[in-house]
Amino acid sequence: MPAPIPANPKTIGMLITWAQRALETSGNTNAAQEALWLLAYALGKQHHELVSRRDQPVSGEDLARAESVVSRRMAREPLQYILGTQEFCGLDFQVNSAVLIPRPETELLVQAVVREGGFAEGAVLVDVGTGSGCVAVTLATILSGTRIFALDCSGDALTVARGNAERHGVSDNITWKKGDLFSALHECNLVGAVDAVVSNPPYIAEAVWADLQPEVRDFEPRAALVAGQQGTEFHERLLDDARLFLVPGGLLVMELGQGQAPLVRQAAERAGGYTGLQTVKDEVGIERVMIARRAG
Ligand SMILES: C[S@@+](CC[C@H](N)C(=O)[O-])C[C@H]1O[C@@H](n2cnc3c(N)ncnc32)[C@H](O)[C@@H]1O
Image (cartoon, rainbow, N blue to C red; front, top):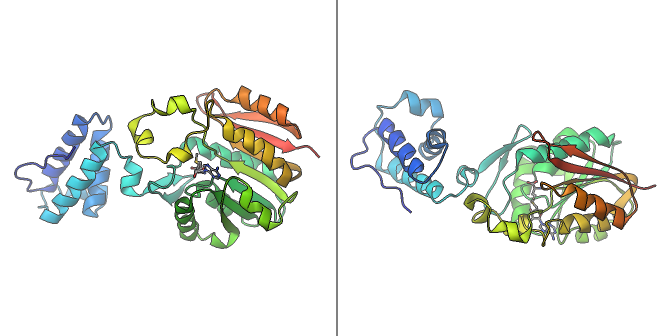
């Protein structure tokens, strides 16, 4: 649905009012703030410049760019894909529709690896399903002496992740591999040599996917989200396959969806070969991260 441009949009102030009203009509509950973010991006200005230069005239090109971004947002495209960026653990990550937008709860995954790790110089970490690279790149910036292997089945996602590693100066610490879960690791001689496996896997149940908000369902990659009937298919595969690569005592740290902890705990017990199972709750009390150690 295109956003109708005002009949006589002379100034930045008029454009702000128009963008806010257009977003409100599409049900956007944060229209005032998003209007400023989108117009700052479209006009190549800082937010405070928009506000302080309300009387400044706008060009036809500015109007066209403003109309384009506001229309995209009205169609429920996520703000982060339009602006091309999302903050994660205090770092800026480039994102596009090839990758999941990094979520705040995934910061708990990074924190758990850092807290539990105690990694020696040269320790090997594997990020399964790296997406934008937010987990691998953040870990590389914190744990500078480690070697990180970042895996994904999507070549387009790996391109985005590589760009993010370059932006943050950690390209030399990360090896990128394309393939199904751990398959590409076999050629790297890493059997029994990995100190930690970390993953935010797809974990939405098939039946739930259709009811997700349009921003997620219609724009984020389905393969980054959906994992079988119960949403725990990838956790089960990770539990089965990580054992082969982990050193005795090595860490497996996985993000969980709401209510999945009991299922994944049972899967870990069925799989065998793990000790010290524990979970970390997020700020609303959901068991969000599972930590296990390879039995030694
Ligand atoms: C939930 S996203 C996580 C992305 C990123 N790590 C994050 O936390 O924002 C899951 C990622 O797993 C990847 N993926 C899905 N199925 C896969 C498979 N069979 N093998 C490897 N990666 C897979 C998707 O492409 C996606 O990038």
